[in-house]
Structures are given as structure tokens and as C-alpha cells.
Figure 1 (tube, rainbow, N blue to C red):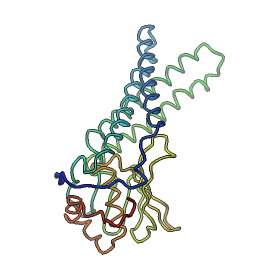
Figure 2: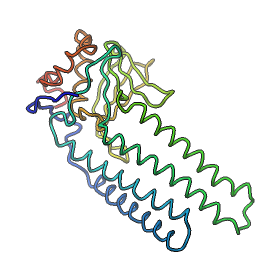
Figure 3: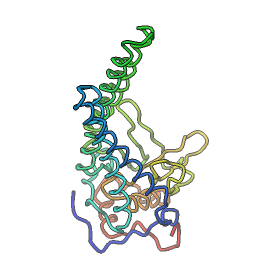
Figure 4: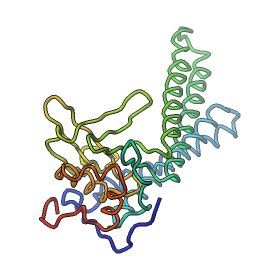
Length: 276
């Protein structure tokens, strides 16, 4: 990555300019309390010798606290007007790729791994606690079975996160924009099929994550980008997508360093009052 001009200014789209709501703060406080409670239950498990309870609590607690840190980090990053983690690497044959900052990508990976291990531990604890009940043995087996399936799904997601650590999950080429969802799922849409690019403040999202909704024609489904998690930040990501949607004549820039020059000098934002 290369540094951007420290003076570059990316204005906030009006849809993202609302102040943080009480709900966001409340979600952070409640999540923090739940994380601490999980750790307390884990310590209790150690004291009374319930080792799977201990494992579930001591694994889930830190995972939840990492999630709280992510909420705080997102809130702080939205205050900046520049590019927080530097420019992405030069576009290659596959166009421009936008990645998540390595530190936070690794933190999310650790969080997912902790959740997977906690899920397994909790399912075994549930199986053990029902050992003296009248529950049918096959019903009891549902606990470890569901826990194992859930853990496998989470581990698969962890493996995917690690595989795109450097390449990123959002791609922009001269012909289309894409978002990698998993090893086998990639959403993409041709620029020419896009009917609108809309900033959304995540009001209907419990995590209150900012979104960029790329709406396609009837034949093309909408595509959603979560820009808070990208190295260039939410603001620059919105103006990047918006600019190349509105300027088909400039899309060839997405295959060379001209797009980096635009990110560096802020010329992606046109002062026509659009979304500002």
C-alpha cells in the first residue's frame, strides 16, 4: 500500500451524516456486559470443575469483547475524512481489489475461531448436563451434532477470511464490480446494469454497519458492500464506486494506477452537491 495525500477530503454522504444513535451505544454496552458475564461463567466452570462450561465461557467472552472493540473502531474511523489505512495495491489484470486492514482481519479471524471453539465446548456441556435426564439418547446427541456443524461452518468462514487476507473481497474492473462472499459464492454486477448506488446508514441492521447498496436492473440482483471494513474507509469507497458508475468513459482507469491517483487527489468527488 502507498500513502495518500494527508489533505485529501472525502465528504460524508448525507445518509451517513446522522449522529450515532443511542441504540449503537446500548448495543456496545450490552455486548460488553455479555462478554464479561461469559468470562465470569467460564471462571465459575474452572472453580467447580465443569471444564466444558469453562471453555465455552472463556472462549466466548473474549470473542464478544473483540466484537465490541470492532464497534468502537468503526465508530472512530467514521470521523476521519481521508483514507485511514493507505491506498490499495496497484490494480492488476483483475482490476482494483479492496481488502480489510490486516490487523482487523486477523482480529475477526481470531474472534470466529474462538466462537467455533466455544460452540463446540457449549454443545458438549449441554450433552453432559442432560446425561441424567429422561431425554432420549438421540435427542441428546443433537447438542454435539449441531455444535459440530456450526463449528465447521465457522471454521470454513475463517479459512475463507485467511485466503482473501491480501487480495480482498471487493473487486472493481472496467466491466463489473464484485463481492466475494465465500469460496463458492461471488456476487457481481456489470457497471452497465447498475441503476443506482446508494449510501445506507444501516438503520435496519442490528450491527449498525454502513452499507453501499448497488442496485441492478430486474435481471440483476442488488449487491451490498460493507465499506467500514475496507482499508480505504467508508467515505472513499462510496465515492469510488459512485464515480465509476457515473463515468463509463473512465472505467479503463480501474486496470492501472490512474485510479490510485484519483484516490490520492480526491477527484472522485465532484462538487455538484450529489449525496452531500
